[in-house]
Image (cartoon, rainbow, N blue to C red; front, top):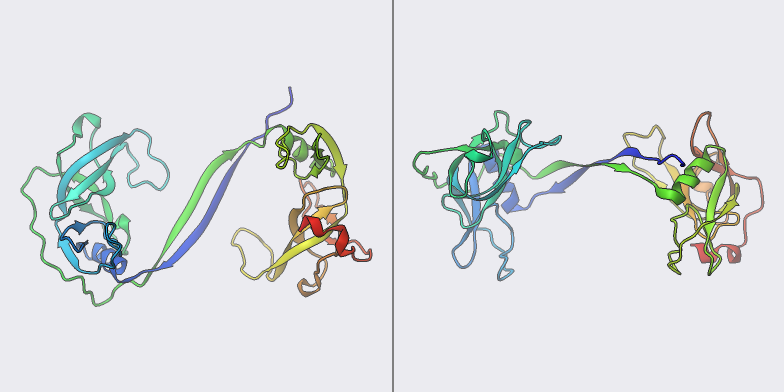
Length: 313
């Protein structure tokens, strides 16, 4: 049996966004241990607040403070917390309708076990010790048997309001390439590039997907392509990625390898970025021990005629 390939992968980037007046007030309020909602035209108070009425689509901006105490409306127990979740020990995800609000807020409830959680139980906010103006300023909720806390009537105006936030986005997953791409990856270890040919339209796809995207038929016939190819189109990268030791600007291009009917993408090197062009003939550059070409460089051949690659743009 061939080895089943798999690898852990992480997609991660910081997401930067500006805040409108409603979200600015809400997040700034959390920093100051104040929970603000927004009033709709029919008098309901929404927490967390939104900028447009979900019923009428009217813009709404009238802020109202609600209490840090509330009632659990529904819940689910989390047996195995993951990286980045509010608590490191098992906890309950809860929807809490804060006193004075008409909608529920999703957050974590610190409880000793699922038997200690129930719909209708009373809870209160446990504030984070260090607060920066984020939903994580609410560390979690905790059981609270006392009377409702009266809000202070804050107007939502702050001397130093937040104007923007940076939220990290991250996805951890395990990738298994399957039969077709496993063969493609194994061939790369031998510095060969293989695709698969559709039995109907006869197009050769690189990297192979295991099926023809046009005909929908499974592909099994392997075809070696390249190693040289043609730049069909490209972009100039001007923003440096933190995990890539490549100086900007550099060029990423779609390259139609000789014999392939689908262009793959790769970095272009060995030439100034402003001299890369459509039709440029290129060849792969390998580094010691690499499982794929480090980049492609000019092959020293005349540029390809546009008619030979126009269908691969």
